[in-house]
Length: 267
Length: 319
Image 1: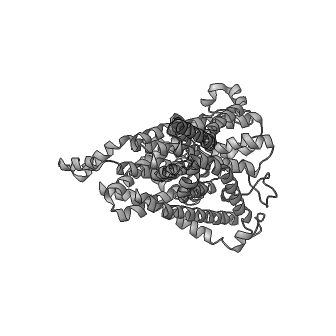
Image 2: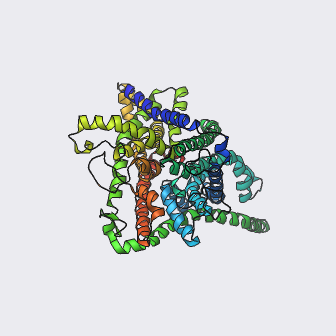
Image 3: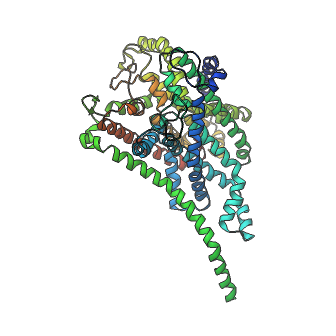
């Protein structure tokens, strides 16, 4: 019986190894300096790169963070400091539910809320779609990190006469800041890898966007478009893009693990 | 005495302004999340009005998807979503439980953490990367090895008949199972770890073997594990990009798993930017609404189950 369970652990690791192996081997051949500095070339012309896509992903995730960080952190503070009532439980529950909403649905919502009134696809719509995805992660990790701050800190501050809001902001939040930052990095890693919400909000752009209310290129949508195309050099660039994307997310995930490990052991 | 009391109430009133502002500001942002979900539902409801008025509830039971004749029905997509998720769970559940048991009962701590890390790394891979890997690596393998094997050995079952395209419901189920595996296994592992040692030691004291003691732990954490399964189901229902690339994107219902299919998320990804008429667009948004409602129901149910076991929902909320 135990042999079977050990076998299933092995079977689970196999796809992981295979994915890394194929992405590395198929993607490495197309990675060169051009990939990071040049715009996509038309079909048939060799070379070209995905510079606008890499920058576009960073911009879209940055936009999403601008919207989701204040909302998520403030909501997390509310839930941990004042949230032991029915309203808090309701918000907590709905945040977890929002976490499970498919990413394509957030894209649809951003489409109806922003693209239709504006009349065209834009980076703002893409940023909003990503923000909706990031909010639950940031809220929940902020709340959990704030909860790990010992109550004695709060009580000591209040006993010294510091008002509640100063305690929460200057002392509790500052203590938990490291954990909150790792939560934000988790959310950023997730948003950077999302394709579906960007398909019809930020659309895609084969050139540099000149302003944020135009379609913005993103690495994930490019990987999708190039991956289903019938051209070999595009497919090679799709694998290269996948490699870059995975490395970005891997670095973020490992940083998060390293940063949170001692904290969990202390419990 | 009275003056001291009065002074303190005056003091608390002035500092209360800062506290009041802070508390209400944070409460506002928390309420914003509630508002967000409400806005999402309202937006999708309004935008799908055209399609709802034209087709009514029969939208959910019709099988036609004809953008030219403007006849739409969501049944092939609902079927595709449910079947691909079911295949994913069928493959992933035994494997995940095996991994969870392996990680919580058998491995020594020095091995358990890196192994858990690797399994959770699977969860961090973007779905588009699963998509192209599935399309370029897994599908040819299915086409050349798996499907001929299945049709030659199990071809008497209607599920395994048909031409081995590679692309189809089976491929979608398989790629979904890989994606769903880390969620189910990490939550199950945490739930199994939370079983009190007293339970396992009592079983061992009564003379049970190690495996029987593990079975006791499993039955103790049954609701948590079921919650993990349903969370995995919720993820599988909403998965878009990986499925779009390997399912074949044909709105038909067929018994054979080798045939192409279509899921709700895939049709949105493929046809949203190509919807030419208002009715087409509103039919697609109605599909998004149906998907939204289904995943909310499934995820609420799962969260309730996991909460009831772990009380803090640590592992579940980390996903």
